[in-house]
Image (cartoon, rainbow, N blue to C red; front, top):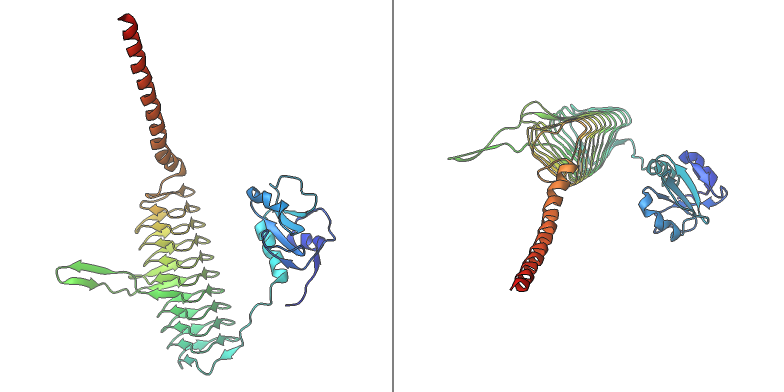
Length: 352
């Protein structure tokens, strides 16, 4: 990596922030507050960690407008959205992006009927089956498998060991990380006297433009019709999306969350880590589902839920808090009853 040096003033312009302190401080790297060296720029995205500013070795810190306190030995770059601003700064010091060579590796298998666009990279041991279509500028990295008649759009990146099953469709600028499986069979079985009978899953997965799928995610093909991820959806690692699920534009599913079959999630919703959503539900636009929640019924647009079964934060706090309050009241009542009994004994003694 080149030894890049910027001043705090340069950094402030790039981050779009207001500088408080010495604009001439030289910066040659980025780091966390805890691990920073004097020549590193760091950032503070949550004011509750402001106490770390006194111990960090970093001399230049990107922070939000809600930061309070006096830090005379630090140069602050105050930004509207410090996390996004710091991302711009990181890119200044990051190594150059990996560029995959255009062409088909000699160990790859590409069916004769496959349609390969221009400036495409197909890595070692990739398998491209009959009827596959790959758009211009897309990279299919080592060990990936594209099943019969699958389609991948333009300028997409399919990382190593991804499996895209037959007839599934990905849009432009898709990113699919290592080990993800798109189009595996949905969990369709019917139990009966003769045992467990498999129900055929003959639909597909359709993924729109600008979708990013984390490592080892699993997205099941529809029983019939489509499992759909709309434009801009982001999946963290280890997310499970079942058959015939529809996920709306710009929604995010965080690590180890899962959505059961035929549920629809609206635009701009967030399903946090390890949350589970039952099947055949409707989750509205802009819904927030807290981590480890269990959703068993529909949620209206704009609502936030927490706990199992998932409920509003107000109801959750009351349900958890009221028993504790009741126990405290019970202790007070027991104490009062004891004092009343002692007073009654004293009154009886005095009367006697």
